Length: 145
Picture 1 (tube, rainbow, N blue to C red):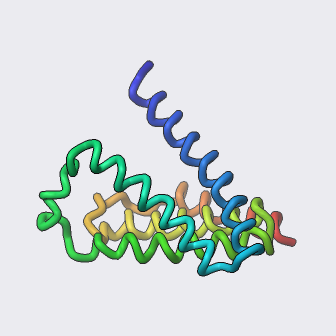
Picture 2: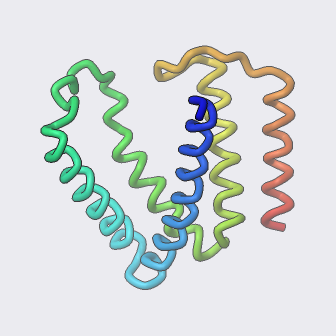
């Protein structure tokens, strides 16, 4: 199997997992609350990755000083993501929630690529990408109307 096919399979697994997690987080949110659901999500993930790192004898954590300071905000950003998905999914539905989330991701990613911020390689925003974003905005409208 080529490396491109493997990357596509990994991305598909990630997408399937995100949709399943969103449904489960929505159940947690509706049953016990947003903050409690975020806590359970992160505590469970934290416990699992701790076990994996113990098995791997720490992985590459010794290189933590070489990481740019702003990269450490990823945990806080993850809390926002998990909270937003957990709160929105049971209220808007999975399709509307993910249409908005993915469209927002695409727009911000295109801007990050265009300006090369946060260590990203510069990839200019061209007409094709702008048309793609316009289609995503139309998709949001079609999905939530």
